[in-house]
View 1 (cartoon, rainbow, N blue to C red):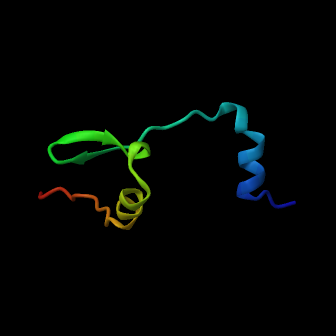
View 2 (cartoon, rainbow, N blue to C red; view 1 turned 45 degrees about the vertical axis):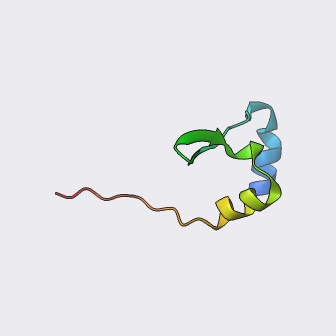
Length: 55
């Protein structure tokens, strides 16, 4: 029997905790959850990248 992601989430629901995501806005950090609908949409459209080592 194949386990789906939904089943795994349901089984582990009691282990989950809330995660706050902060982003830098105008020189200081703010939680994304405090953004209005438009700003949340802009945040989702941002391109995320991982900086590689130079050497």
